[in-house]
Image 1 (cartoon, rainbow, N blue to C red):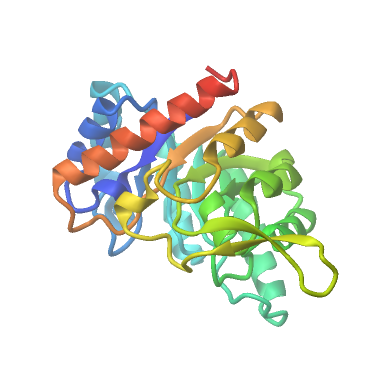
Image 2: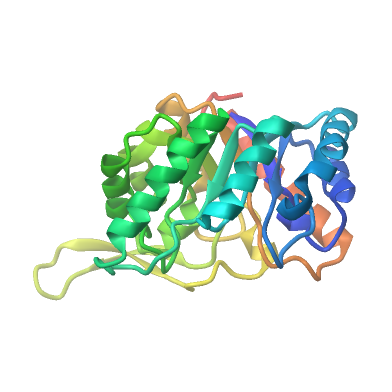
Length: 283
């Protein structure tokens, strides 16, 4: 697995700052944020102007270009994202599902959209990945599996983010095994809230429930090891199933943070990721 960090962690700073300190923290690569309002890094409306700069920064700081995150399914934005990815040499474009949880009327449109975008990604020689997202049409393991069954394109993959699965009330360690066959990217961060085992009053059976927040918490609480997700176990299951793709830290909400705070989050998380890989024999 390649360890990377999404540049959105350094969204309050320029792109070179993100490259510099992600490299200094010891990561293998970088995921470029193309997220309106959260960063001004890979700005898709002027991506052609940024191609040479991005390639040079990757060379200077010896970081692999692991992925790009562009959250919208908007066809025009995604076309630009695929064009930029193909020209720069970014193999994966990550997006969100959109839609609304448990809205059956919205499901067909979402599947058609992702299917069409996957076909377009294939034309550009890149992979489109989508992740379960709190509040979205795809929001947990059952809806992720349903999308996997509906979209057969080889250019379509799952971006598995344990924090959203955690917030859906599932155990990410158990959930990852059910979808790992189509996982081509992993967004990783910790999240507030812990798993607890409690007995049902009706039948005495034990159920696992999540206590915590619908939001992932402050940026520092998203650093791996700070929250309630068993990320060590999660990474072990990835390794056991032969996953060798990117493992990209994605911490949101730090745009107003000092550079020192961003660097601490990046370094602390990378140390936890490295230790997790070592504990399961992946490094």
